[in-house]
Amino acid sequence: MTHFLRDQDLQIWLAARPWLDVRSNDEHTLISYRLGQALLRLHPDVDASVVLPAILMHDVGWKRFPPEQLAAAVGPNPRYPELQRAHEIEGVKIAKEAFTRLAIPGLQVETILAIIDGHDTRKTAISHEDALMKDADKLWRFTGHGIATIGGWFDTPPKETVAMLESFVLPSMLTETGTAMAQALIAEGTASAFMTDLLHIGGPA
Image (tube, rainbow, N blue to C red; front, top):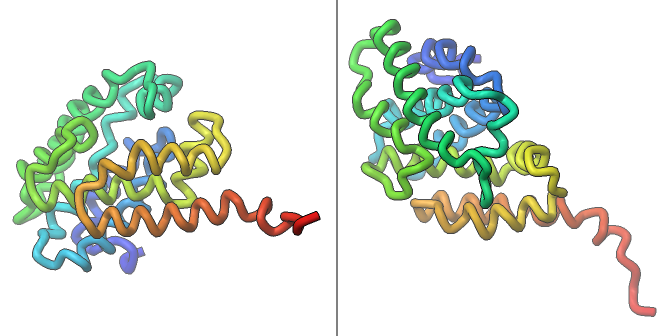
């Protein structure tokens, strides 16, 4: 367990986890955390002590809203788009209370809260740390777990889900490394989606 999370992040994860048991946010957060670490290895000048806690806390606000509305709050044609901003506002409140209670020495609370506040609705980054947090969050969508989860939300097969992510999410990546990682995941996701068709394709008549 301690090999997965940095020691200093474990107590933040434990504080966030009770708020993440909706729409697979707990699993999404852990995958995004590791993707964030991968991005940080390629950006050694960016502060991991800001990026990683922000990832762990960024989606805690979703639990404040009815579960049946959550999937319909995102995507190309959301029915409840106002929840995108509302979950950021609630997430800041929850994270601030948790950070106050944890009282972690040296934790840059206000900087982390500023990233959580706008991680979905603010399309540009306010810092390098914000850019990596946003890209780690979005990269999850291109993973096998993300494709399956999002396909479940919208009742779309993998081929359609990957195509939607490529057209809708890929252009919003903020860093070259994040874009390259997303393109690699799209390549894998596309191959997996078409695997059965291609393995059984017939030759010319």
